[in-house]
Amino acid sequence: MEALRIASDSVGGLPTFYLDSAPEVNIAALIDSLKFIYTYKMMNWLRNPYVVKDVLSIFGPFLDHSVDSVAALRLYMALEQKNEGEMRYVCQIFQISPDQYKRWIRLLLMFLYSEENERPLLEGFVEEFFRAGDYGNSIFIYCFEDNSVLLPDTGIVTLEDPKGITALINLSKKHLVAVNHTKLDDQKINLFCERANFSNSSRASVREHLASQLVVKVTHNSLEMLAAYNRCCVQFARNEVFSSSKVVHGVDMQPPI
Image (cartoon, rainbow, N blue to C red; front, side):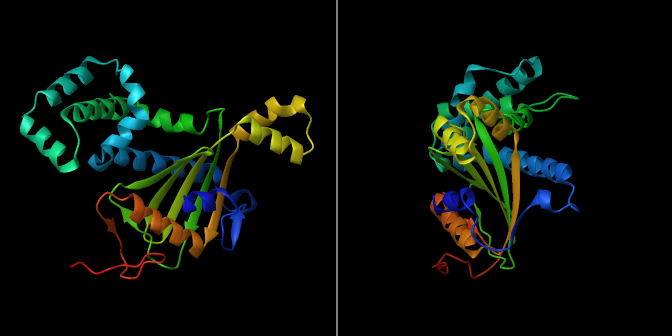
């Protein structure tokens, strides 16, 4: 949770700047690119067999719905009727049950299936994350001279606490992105109004304003964040992490036996 704290607070390390203070940056284009990357990483995370149980835990309620498409139904039936040897192999290797495997396949179809000229549900889901009135959103981009940003076998690291959800995403061996979805509960709104000397009658408009804002910050060489992220990768990886460097900041790397 150390990485969640750092990403949610002042973002240790200097220099840090808000992108709206950098007029040479096309903010709208950058945000679109970040959302695209986030969607792509989420897609790979959903498909990762190491996180089947996590996916079902988070998105299980969506199984009450289905894609309104005969072609999607046929595809699911074809997958379900495949040689059971593949399903047994996946279940054995990744320690899941046949029922969990089938439910996972259903979720993948629901989120990733699309027909011609249609967007998959996952794209709308990610977009809704940034529009939901109950959450404030921020994106922190970390750039490092050190090339030891780890990549876990889960693809991304998701951290959740009562304040909200953070997704930690490896962009490259020198770049890391933290996407925060912070719950705008009454306590947070009241504190904001108190600090800004707003009246109670302003609470609704304050909530709407915070939910509509997307804060984007860039930080260079925050070794505190790099160490915290790398430790999170080791902690939450199922079996292994990948590194482009033999020396990893924040982690004592041991050679294979």
